[in-house]
Image 1 (cartoon, rainbow, N blue to C red):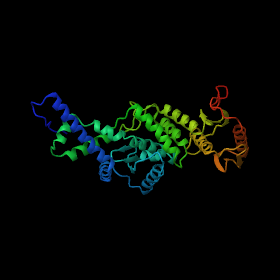
Image 2: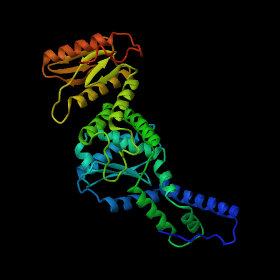
Image 3: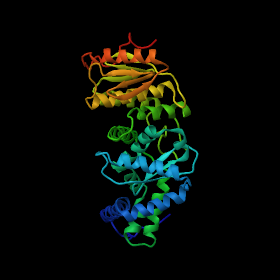
Image 4: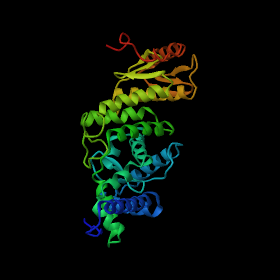
Length: 350
């Protein structure tokens, strides 16, 4: 990949700088058009499918499209996206120029919808911040930019090639990743999905791959530029706590409300006890966020605990459900205090 530097040999430093600035502005405009236009999106989608392959599974394609549609309805999402599933068995999801997202089959197999929604929301956040197109621009060297701006042949194909290469070699800064995690949680909270899916997705990833997982395309969770996965679990618990109005927290797999130990779910089916705690807390956090938690609003039916008419968690039997409902009602009447909203060291499960 090369292009001639179309600057006269006798040109001085100021001329070279001026030509370079004009050339980089040209490249920036071209990539912005690629990222913002319907034509650019269609070309990017075709290029991405060619590179990754397309999963011939109508249910999988419908699943990612359904989740994308729900996330795009968030008021925090200002741009439109297209998504497809690819056949790779590795864990990965990525967005590329043109507001195109792809999710690996391995990710679909590993995560449920609430967890997958957070991973996709994280990728949308990169698109909202335009991290991807700005990263692509940085891949174009000055000499190449000057050649393109001067009208040397193959400009469009060369830019497309740069975008395609960047898809496989994306590098985001730690700051960009943290901002994408934060906005991703906000988008998730504005969707129908359980906000506990944010911490849950990172817990699944950590449990399978460890703290410093590097996926196949080295994009989403690279240890060189991503926070440790355990830290991402912790940060999403903190976000859920804040979202709840500082009422609901999870510590070591135990759900706390207003600092009171409520319940420690056990593993069930595909879910670990930790994941179930995040989902229980996520439901309670949304009820608090929406002002639906009232004194005495917890009840139970057989082994299911109910708050404000919504199922919160299923326990082994009615006796356990009664205990959990009682714990919740006792916690609901406690005064809110941000300094006491989290479990004290003495109250944590030993």
